[in-house]
Image (cartoon, rainbow, N blue to C red; front, side):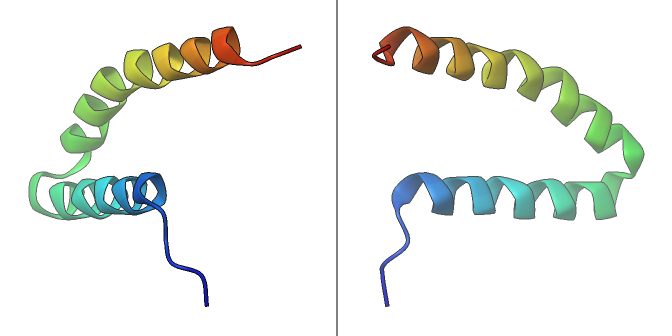
Length: 54
């Protein structure tokens, strides 16, 4: 069985943290996560597309 890589483990931890925060603080935690996470994810996509070879 293959070992899980660091990026996948990080994303799983973020999703678990988001689920726990939503359980504790409700839907406002989802809104805050979306407002914070959207620019970060878009920045990651742009940086990955700039480093990709055509």
